[in-house]
Image (cartoon, rainbow, N blue to C red; front, side, top):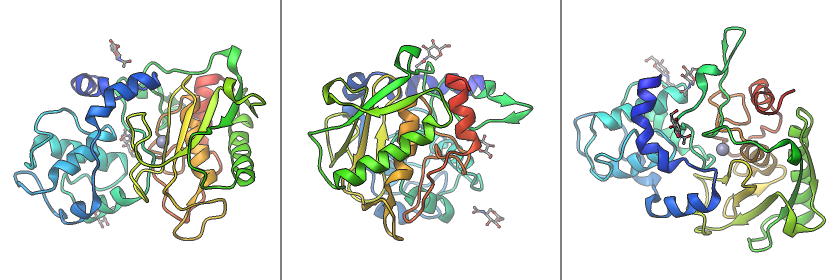
Length: 304
Ligand SMILES: *[C@@H]1O[C@H](CO)[C@@H](O)[C@H](O)[C@H]1NC(C)=O
Ligand SMILES: *[C@@H]1O[C@H](CO)[C@@H](O)[C@H](O)[C@H]1NC(C)=O
Ligand SMILES: *[C@@H]1O[C@H](CO)[C@@H](O)[C@H](O)[C@H]1NC(C)=O
Ligand SMILES: [Zn+2]
């Protein structure tokens, strides 16, 4: 693991220093590029050695979520060793067959709506996550940022500069339930701020580019993102079909809120598919309850 991580490190360092909200905005603005799925579907079956229009978007997608090992040839349509390696890392993460080929099941996985935060972070402390000889899947951000004991009682508010897409009563009730999932299993407590200006956590729905370097991308694809402690910003993509009681084509607001709050508290993505911190959630699905992996992760950060 160590040598692999060290060669990945350089490329990822700038991309994933997400402790600082403004630092993130500064770094990512120039790097971010939209990827499109219509082109992805046309790429089924491509493999190493081929040069095919549309591979740049695939590389951008893999880079954005932490899989692309370097900036080399990122802007060329050549399917090279680096792309094969990135694709294999992605396939391994999502428990697919590790073929290195952009096959049907890989494309289908890429099309499932997901969180905008990366899956792979450099310096992850994976090797330490063993308990009773079991490998844990939960993960932290670089440097394991977390709220200090003086801030275990966190306040939240709803940003006033966003788009109103869910009525306030529903939003408040959903968020209160979502915070409770985490307060039930940790020493942390959450309360809506009486004075919004001093809140630790700010929850806002935005459309498209909203100034933090992670522009939202319209319906589908990325749904939300939230930053590691002590940033406190949680953003939902206003263009999703949000619902507190989702039909087949809608996204469950509470499930995504529970996931994003995990990021606010310091948990990164887990590849345990039962975990709330798993990166993807299909429309019409509810995953509101913390799995053992999520609880083990929050305990590893804040104690039992
Ligand atoms: C994800 O899950 C698989 C199998 O469950 C595991 O082998 C893999 O190493 C995990 N982690 C990452 C970072 O891919
Ligand atoms: C992996 O490969 C096996 C054997 O070819 C196949 O049966 C299975 O469906 C594949 N799994 C996925 C997720 O594509
Ligand atoms: C990653 O680890 C290296 C060596 O341990 C350290 O120098 C570097 O600052 C770390 N990077 C981040 C982003 O934590
Ligand atoms: Zn996430």
